[in-house]
Length: 239
Image 1 (cartoon, rainbow, N blue to C red):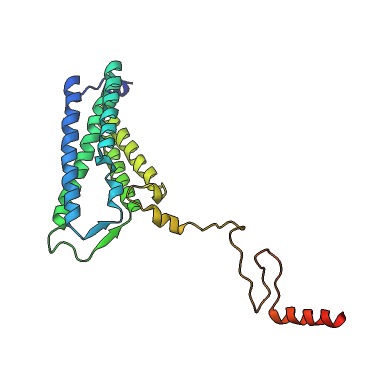
Image 2 (image 1 turned 180 degrees about the vertical axis):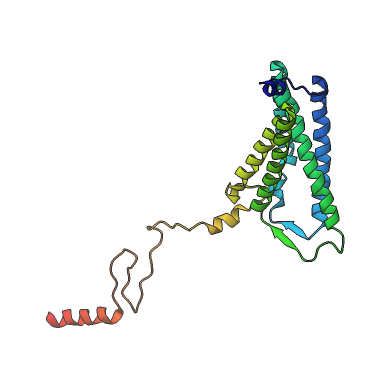
């Protein structure tokens, strides 16, 4: 019971307004780091993504507005309720953004190290599904660290950050299971070619073969010319 009381009574060292004000700074920093990461990935040719545009949805203006709106709703609800809810959701949102920032910094530094001439030999092309699953696995790893530290230190902010990181990782896994035609940057023509062509029966009839009996335009049985000629001669002889 003492552990549960300590966990519910945990508070961040910063006042609530500072917790809310820290999120825009973290968000802008993460945005600039992600943009630098995309620039480094564009300069190197060692590891190439099959559809890099599908992974850039988070930097689109519409999705950035959605992220800011989501954070505003979370902070408003958590501040209105207060107490442990604000620590779990409000401070947890900052913790999850700090984890994502750390992952992006790690990816940026590793990409810069990979751009050296003696770093990598050859090239590798990664599919979009693998890239999404890799992002999900990294977020799940960060979530595990936050959850274990939150349980060890009895801190709700770390537990909230772990839950939000796990939710983001689940979202990437869900995107990896979506058909490719719904991803940005996928050509609809390529998918249309792979679809089976369905032609109505009234628009297409197989041609009549002169050698073997096949079905003609009206679906009637056609006969070779020799057989038709012999039948016509037999009818004339009968008359």
